[in-house]
Image (cartoon, rainbow, N blue to C red; front, side, top):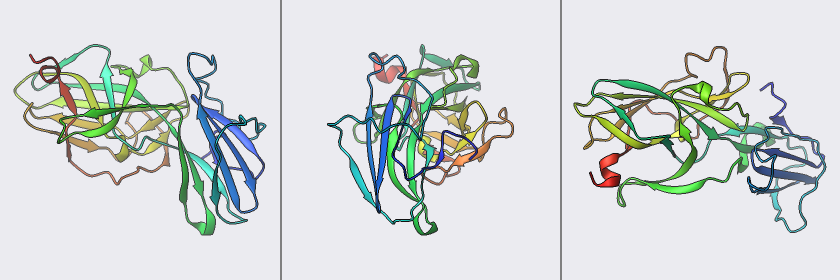
Length: 264
């Protein structure tokens, strides 16, 4: 991946920042020691910086906790971007309605994770995963049939131009089709990013495009993950695999309908 933000780490002590996360690394013999924290966005004017520096000073706070990873003396550790390890729940700026037979294209930003990868013996192993932003957990669905997700605070947008360019996020394009005979009236959508890869499109990182087909309020949705980036992103190269192998025509619950939340 030809990007200064990611790649092989030197064995010298280093530090960098991605979004609101701060990461420090130091190396001692066959151990890589890693410490991280998140800053308060309201207290740090640079909390959303996209600058990542692998060669800065090790200015970690004295009270921070270090985790020690025992590997080999000749291990080559690298960093690459990753997506959250759970589905994410996104809200449009206001409740959305798709009429029967209609479809819409939506965009939102997903905070990236820093993946520390050990390459000992030619085999890639994930050492540590550090979110660029501390995400809140949310339960999506019923008590018995729901799942634990992350809440995305940024709204679901109709145009990618409404999203700020920030290399600590990836852009996700979602196409929603209402194939039912009723209105799709929703205020939340659950997107399964664990089935998505990452692609470098130059000034932005992108996920696979996902297509969600709504078949009625009493049914779950059908999900389809395109194998590459959105068609509008030309020349993008894959830089990180999906956590789970993408399945064709995956069946999942995707929408929180208005009547389920308000009782109407």
